[in-house]
Image 1: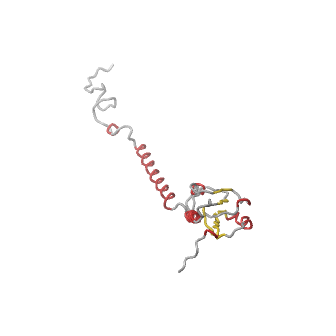
Image 2: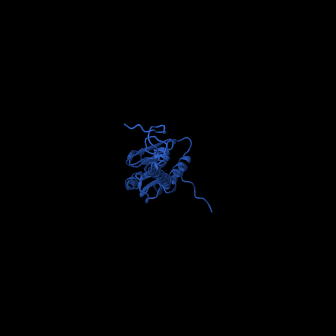
Image 3: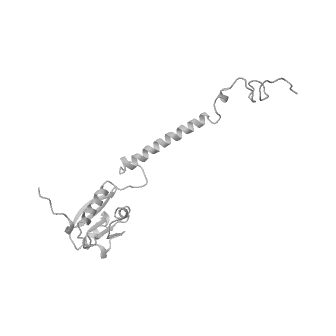
Length: 184
C-alpha cells in the first residue's frame, strides 16, 4: 500500500501522466484532436476541393467544348448558338397568320427541345418521317441527310453545323424565309 504524500489534485505523482500538474509532455500541450494525421487529412481534402473547383470552372466555362478534356457528358459545341439563332431568325420571318413548322430529325434530340420550348410548331423525331419532311426549318443529323434530301418538295438553303463534337447537323431554311441578299 502506497501512503506517499501527493500535492497534485489528481492524486498522482508529478509528471506521471495520471493527472498530476508536474512537467508537461508535448502531447499534453496540444488538443488531442489535433494530431498530425488529422492535419494531413484536412490539407488533402482542402487540396482536393481546390482542384475539383478548378476543374468545374474549366469544364463549365473555359473549355466546355474541348475534346482534350476527359468528361463523360458531351456538351453542345459553340455552333449550337448559331443553330438556335438561325432557327429563331427564320421563325421570326414566318407570316403572323401562320404557325411556324420546325422539323427536327435527330436520334438524340436533347437539348434542342429545351432551346425551342417556347416556340410553336416544333416537331421532334428520331428518324426522318416522310409525312413531316417539309417545313419552315428542317434540322437533320448528317447521317440522315441523304435519306431526307430526295423527300423534300420545297427549296431550302442548306447550312451544316455541329451540335455536338464530331457530329454534323444540317439545317435547312425554306427559301421563302431567307432574307434578301444585302446590297454592298
